[in-house]
Amino acid sequence: MKQMLGDIEVLSPTCNFSTVKDGRGAIFTWIPSEPIVEFNMLYFQPSKIRGNHYHPEFTEYFLIVEGTVVMVTKNTETGKEINMHASKGTCFKTPPNTPHALHAI
Image (cartoon, rainbow, N blue to C red):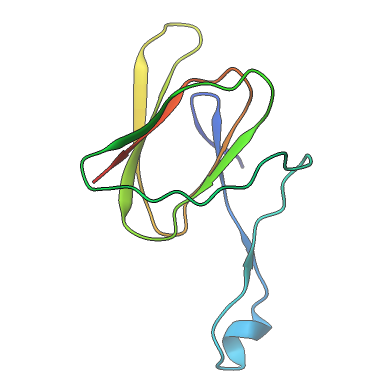
């Protein structure tokens, strides 16, 4: 079942469990449904905001690798702001024309 934050999909990875059982760590995999156009690594300062915009031409993915954020978007029907607290391991898929902002905590 898909977990959604408005039009933003919260992606869940698959886990190759043999990588956990062999004692070396773990491999988690996110497989996008379409080609990735852009891949970025962002650094945030606490209490700062990234985004607060939308992309008309491509889907944007966010994978939180450290710290915590609040992902903010808007309900497309009501225009009401909605948000979700996220931390390490959370991955967001933000489709074209979807407003979004990440607030670092």
